[in-house]
Length: 263
Image (cartoon, rainbow, N blue to C red; front, top):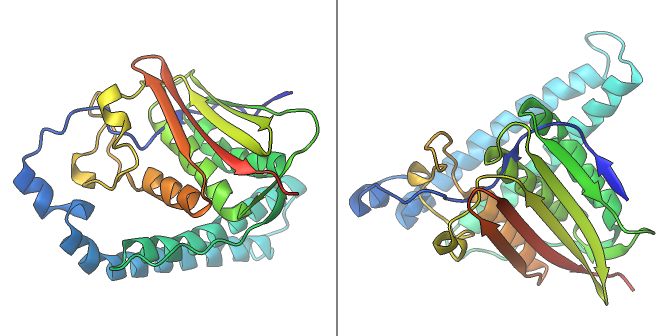
């Protein structure tokens, strides 16, 4: 069964161009240097929390009818926005723990969750960005509704990060496809795109933290911190799930991971 989430554009926090910056510059700037990372983490946390509080307040005011009555569609999308703010607030706390000295383990709250519901929520969250970029998101689901054991909010974040990454690196008119397949005692989730692809020599370091000042696309047109895929790996590591990536330059990239079926 295939579903379409509309038109949008594809992304990945990969590094498809060779780093031309000097090692000295890399040490001086961004998250690449551990000292800078430790010093900037509290400030980053404060900035993120402040901005999320502003967004939360604005969304709540609109939802409460402060600026007029809302129709059902408006209420629905504001509910999605409010849920996303809460998800991001949790993510900020986990990210700060990840960046802090000693790296405290990520908090995971496993519970039985229908995998199709997880995927649909993530697709809806990514829809507006994909539509804006002229990219289509398609979903292929198996018959029935497999239930997996996971932290639903964090797996939704994994998928959202993968969608965003795919959007960044896929041209207008391209597509992102998310597929769900039941295999023995687990479910495999696959996110593929028709983007620029990743050089083979970059695949092994795809999920490593890197200096955001030297991460760019093949044409140098988009700069990204690389934290999206670092967070993906941290969440999946906490779930004891392995992530696999395959890619061909000019053909696109496929990312897959598994989650255990709830028994």
